[in-house]
Length: 321
Image (tube, rainbow, N blue to C red; front, side):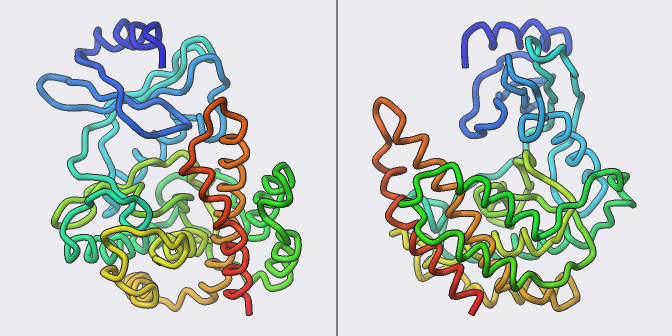
């Protein structure tokens, strides 16, 4: 982020009464700032300047889903206003209310996320919140014009990513892709899919989830894509990290039951979607490692993930057997 961008945001937002802009950490697809509006804290999401605001950089599309969910039981911030700008030089942005709570990934990061009992209940609340999201009708929320992404298309997407990385990072991934394609389960009714549903993309306090955030890659599709991703990120054996919460969080089977019970139907074939999630994680981490190795000073923590990728692929195969 440059001083020029911050100055530009001040010029655009001060007539709206927003002052005290300061960067917030997180968010690689768009830039995030905190500010103040009439003694009320707000958050500003802005697309990266100089780039077309498409796909994960389309902040106004993010605002659309948050606005659509505002009248539902899914907790989201309030969208206060949007500004389309004149991209790519003047990027689009939106302003939303500040949501209380903290964001943490207890089974990946070594940081203190709170008391173990509170964090355990946070996982359960997240599973129920995910089910509430998946119960919603896209048509009822005015989202029926969105394309629907089938599970097979998810496999193809991550194959395209893996084809761009060093084969030694993910040995045997084409065979796992073939297994996924051969065993793809029948689709269920399409729902709103967050795309990266895990505790790190939720805000929570001692009472539960206060907001679902980071909607950069939301879509309409099979809701079990979210469920599989949430479950592998709720499993301490997925990344085998040493954190204060290993051994204290609910078993994955319990979280799957929380999800199914709230959803009020069986949500079959979750094992296949956990396999897909392991395949997706292999692809995304392979890409992250590839880019890290190109840096002048590679991050050793990122490089350490390279050793975990073959195991992720093996776990995908285990879910399919």
